[in-house]
Length: 177
Image (cartoon, rainbow, N blue to C red):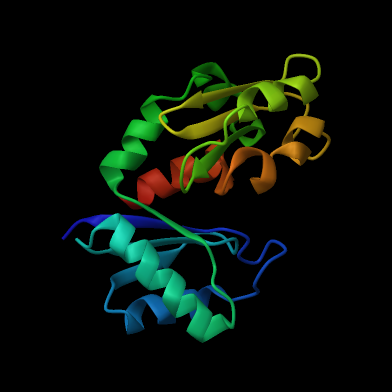
């Protein structure tokens, strides 16, 4: 049995409020093994061999039933997660200040022109790169004060969910990477 990394978009961070115990209970009810959560912001790891796309659709349908709203869900295999991590265009930032490196894990395609538009809002040495279908945003002065981070919304970039590099690394460890 392999693992699946499940990311909920806007779970407990301005969207649907669902305790981590409820997230684990939902996974168990769906037949997913050994559900484990990380933090209280929509990170779930399970054991499953289900196809990621099929599992995304099933979880989204179940969130609508359980929480009264369809929650956009992204599912990645450990191999996909490792590939995303290896593609990081800011490896020094990942080592020196991982809290300020954000990965927007994308559900679909990045919107045309998104990278150029985000770069127009960058200040100082902020940077953004699209690699492997995800967006990597470096905010050396903090994410909270960044105009570029503020503008990284679905209408501009497409549907995705952001995780800082600390969370990326913790999720990797949970699946044995």
